[in-house]
Length: 314
Image (cartoon, rainbow, N blue to C red; front, top):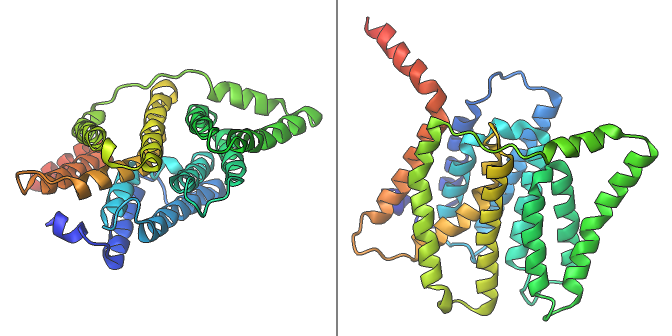
């Protein structure tokens, strides 16, 4: 059923998926009375989702189906309340834009000076969410691999990255804004993730992702050199965000939202290109992904749901 629904790019289905799972994710808000900063965060989330929807409609490199929208919006659903933090929501929008730019960075129409823009936006993302410095390292390593093609690329990227950081450092020094230094020191303190029972629902998804990585490695030689580099970059960005979550996540799982774009690409390609011997395997993968994330999203309210049923029954 889901395979037939998502196997073609359909605007109305994509809109329905976005609205449905955004509303389900919004149920995690503790109150409808949001502060002005939280409203900014929600606005930035909507911008990010809209941008991903636009990329899905116009980018055939990822897929020509509705799978990308399904995987992306469903993945970020449990983290929508946490993304009301305008700093995380802003950095998510910037990282999403950067990743989309990197997909076509080596195309003939692209200007090498876009490396400066990517470095600039990446710097703003790191300033908003300092633990993303690990992800920045992956992007700059990718730029270094292109120095034989165009030596300007890594230099422009680093210059773009340094400009906002130097401006913020100068302003904080001149105006004696010590709180900025305290903020970045606090943000970069190691706070290892704390295990929660609801994370068990992510295990089947991890298994699916491992299968998609194995499939990608097997089919790597079928890709052009450019596509190899691009998709390897997406995978390494995925690993960088996982490492960021492990080292700095603590009790906050919102950093997992940054995996959304990478997961969207990895699983959309896997589902679109895989040809399992058993027909229902694709359908099973989609339903497992859906059910696991619904349980993850509503885990904290399951006890209340059962207590409500018990009260009504008696």
